Image (tube, rainbow, N blue to C red; front, top):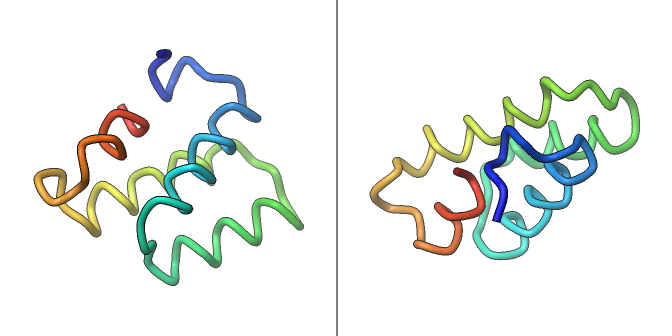
Length: 71
């Protein structure tokens, strides 16, 4: 499996969608996700959403399969 940074923009979005379906994400994540999807598809938003999950959940509390997707 490819690292997050090596995926295409669409691949990164799909990966974050998978994560979103696996765990409860913060409201800020949902807001950025909707904004990215409907308004501005700037790839930096994808990295911001990834960082939100890593900071919000703390790396040690994330399920192993989610960690794998965010690497």
